[in-house]
Amino acid sequence: MAAMEVNLANEELAEYLAYNLNDLEFELLVRKRIAIEFKRAFDKMPNLYEGASTCHYSHSFTDKGEWTVRIGENYSKSSTAEGEVLFRTMADAMLRMEQRLGNKLSNLLSAPHNND
Image (cartoon, rainbow, N blue to C red; front, side):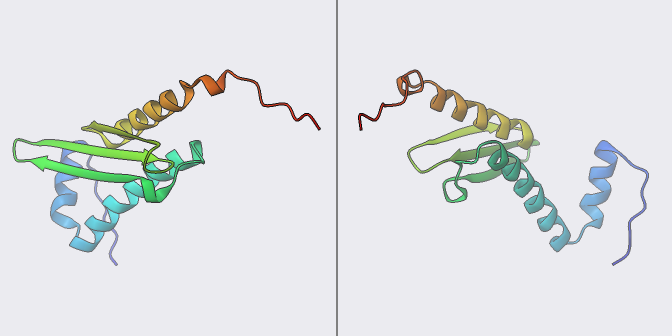
């Protein structure tokens, strides 16, 4: 595999990579980036379950892209967020999950006492 030496950034780098990455490299790059974002979320919120978490991307030809991220502990305890930037969309989904789980009366109640 040949190394790519480029001195580009932002849109120029994106265009260069769009033309120079092969299909395998492109797919692996996108999948790896998604996996990194989910790993960060799972590290911060250990109760999350991979089977209850998903990620979708849609793109229109007006250059409007949208990520939909769903994270959850199970199918009833989950949070979904939509946005144009994967990292920020993941952060929004995590915040919504924390808000849902933190807004429960049981969090204010003391633990039950054992009368043994």
